[in-house]
Image 1 (cartoon, helix red, strand yellow):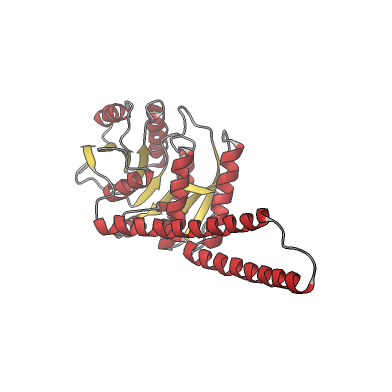
Image 2: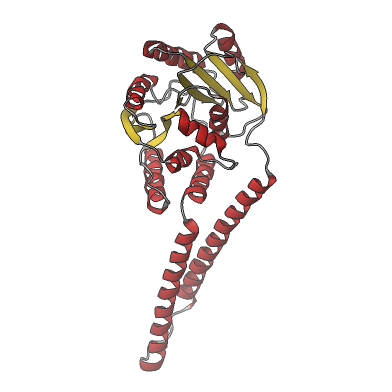
Length: 312
């Protein structure tokens, strides 16, 4: 693929997706061939423990438009997307998961919007098929809470499925930070943006690789990178202090002007535990910021490439 001009790069992060990779390659390839123009499918194997890497090698051997980057271990989806940004060459770049929940057939509609002059085209989910009520509720709460405390407007019901212009890709490539939240970085970049609605499908095969713990850690990264939770902590602190002050006035009034005795230890302990919990929560938030600062100061790379196929 050296010296080849590329119109479209499709970045596909992969982690333990051996059951779906052949179908993913075929559907995305069919869509891109129908679109026309030179394209590349850039699969980023995020340290898969199944035969995903082997399947990708075989795909790359028979298809010169497909390429593979394989990590030395699992670095996470954000690192895989960052590697795609670093190695892609297209004038437009599409991010899509390998599990086929985001239908590749939406890509031509994104390209149409890009040709109209939009630099960022989000895939917006009008409906989510095959997901539990818990997943839908927590996703809705997460996006709306992030939007409420974010420095910039955050679109709800959008994921990583999107198209960005090559200029946006080059900007993201130049950013030096290690703890990345790509959705937030794309929103932060600005440029002219729009959305394309679609129905998110059930997984073609396999199971989700995002455990509740991984989702929680991703949420922490999002909040600490693209919102002002410390400012929110200050507001909460002032609010609780005001409530406590008025409660003290009530206690003094009851002591001096009424015969009502102070209630027992239960209410006192409840209040004490509540405020101590809030304090510990704020300290943990500060600790999260310090941990991220330490990672940035160390300057370690976001990922380590162990193998490449059809990549310059």
